[in-house]
Length: 222
Length: 222
DNA sequence: ATCCGACTTGGTCAATTGACATATTCGGGT
DNA sequence: ACCCGAATATGTCAATTGACCAAGTCGGAT
Image (tube, rainbow over all chains, first blue to last red; front, side, top):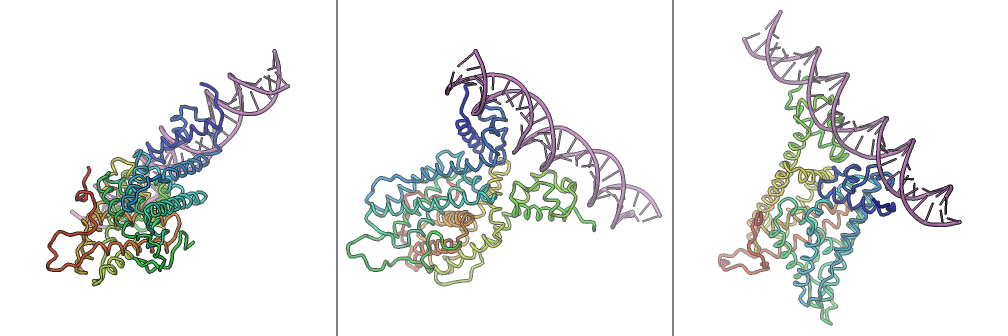
């Protein structure tokens, strides 16, 4: 029982809390369960954290940041846009369901944050991070393949995030991985149809499936 | 204080529970809060329900059935496939976020059901119902417009459910209705490209954007 | 009318939980 | 050595919650 710094204890408690939530759900994440998981007496909790909410708040921040990191897709440069998109989506999907236990945690955390008014901004920040990463990925894929999108990238980004997020939720109910991959491939094929070759003379207004909506940007209705 | 039948009490308690969850979240849905919301003494609860789990189980069943009903899209017969799809998606989307309070309830219920092993089948049943409704709607739209899909309908159905579900989750964080509608319109335009005219000579193998996946059906990996 | 069973009520109990108070122990700077 | 603050352990408390009991009250069938 070596003596540890409070900061280390905090990290260990955060990790233990994540394990408890992944295993038993956020409802079972009591201070006693968390400290027991970390192998510490319960009183340590309130020495390292002012309250349980403080731990959860920090847990959300850390988890979201970690996922945002993994969502930064390091794709290989592929000349074909469809293969590039498909590879990127596959990598993202794998990152989402890699530890199947932790998949449900994200949704529990999101709903928990949405319920606490002081944590709602974290959920918003989480989604803004997703959208940002999707924007960057779409742009990168298009550049690598020498194409450009015929639909505003923010709309495509939101669609991408929506598909991945919804797919994760559906995969939680039935664990139908084959169906999920089929949907991903279908979606990749769709995205490929929304790219046009980037020729030197392609400066005219882009045609394509522009929607009736005005040019909706990332945040259009506060 | 008129005397009521136990069956009526059950219905009133279910309704009160739904209101409590919509307002304060499932974590605050205690037996006392529910009975107080219904204006009854707390002891009534265990006279009408064997346990709190029994109420929640029935609540999930009722809520899912109700949503499945509303998801049965009564679309007007539109000749144009894209307009038909768009109208149907708009109706479905409106049904989802019509009472904005109850939107979050569905996700809380789903995660709650996924945590309790004896309720996990309800979540599965919920999604199976969604897929079934999506299948029927897609088929109906195609028939009305005199077209047929160039991609297996089960895949399109899963994609549709995924998009709507994910869109609802993203809408919960930022309430960006304009962006959501833009995504829906974009998705409708996409679906329209996957339909081909149904001519009498169109019995040859359908071309189009068939994916690399084998013909995944509704349930392919148990 | 009356009697039986369905309905109603207030009160209580054991368990859990977040929070804290108090006491003790360690370790390094001087 | 020594001493002060950081770290750790033990114990307890008030509040909440799910569950349930025992005693009532009412209505309709006979």
